[in-house]
Amino acid sequence: MEHGKIDWNKVWKDLMTAQQAANKEIEDNLWNKRNNAERFWKRSQENSERTQLTLEELPLTPRSRVLDIGAGPGRLSIPIAERVAHVTAVEPAEGMKYLLLKNIDEKGITNLECVSKRWEDIDVENDLNGPYDIVIASFSLGMPDIKDAIQKMEQASSKHVYLYWFAGTTPWEEHSVGLWPYLYGTSYTCGPKCDVLYNVLYDMGIYPDMHVFPLEYTNNFGSMDDAMDFFRSRYTIETQEQETILYNYLRDELSWEDGQITEKGDSTRVRICWEKKENN
Ligand SMILES: C[S@@+](CC[C@H](N)C(=O)[O-])C[C@H]1O[C@@H](n2cnc3c(N)ncnc32)[C@H](O)[C@@H]1O
Image (cartoon, rainbow, N blue to C red):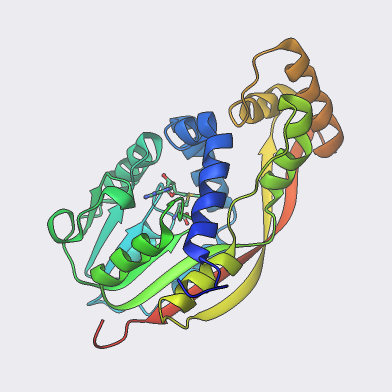
């Protein structure tokens, strides 16, 4: 490393590790639980406009072979499989994988295979069926060594890599920043954003296209009990005092309209994409 030069991969690793440590319980539970996976799927079906835009911007053809890393319940993998020759979906979390396989089955899709591993643990040669014309990782970069992860994406790709990530603090991080000092007596460290990612890529000799877009985030609950159940699974709530702190926070922060309780937030997202260099 040159003198005075910032090691952006270390910046990413430090922020990601701190965030994952703070969210230990959440990380272990969030996408492993079927009800969280189902809520994610329902929300993405209700707000399908963004998915439609993503499908239009990807260079898909009927002959494409696509790798979708951290595919979740198949928000992208499933409609992509309906347009291309083959999709490999990498999805490690139990709840998400369950829903993905259920969705594949219900839709009668036969050209989508699921590999149930974290990207860090994937051996590109032996676990995958590459090369892929398009490699996608959409809001799934929970990978501490992002440089290593990107090198593997390039290894798996014959042409395109598409990453989707965040710019600025997300609405759910804002809740954590607000709640952490009261719940646990410490401040909250937010995860690494697209500025760090861009610098890691730049230092790897990759100069990607960046496109910024807004995305409204809404989460609906039928009652305060439902909202409490959902948020309880995001935080470690062990005492009555923590329960009261969370309740009071949600009562003030959530919007109440026509008997419906909604968590609303504006987020800014980015698409970062590039074509692999011939000699890579
Ligand atoms: C917010 S969901 C996004 C799902 C889907 N890509 C989409 O855009 O709708 C994040 C997904 O990334 C997966 N994920 C997180 N870290 C991962 C990793 N290190 N390797 C593979 N998948 C990961 C999670 O299990 C989860 O299903």
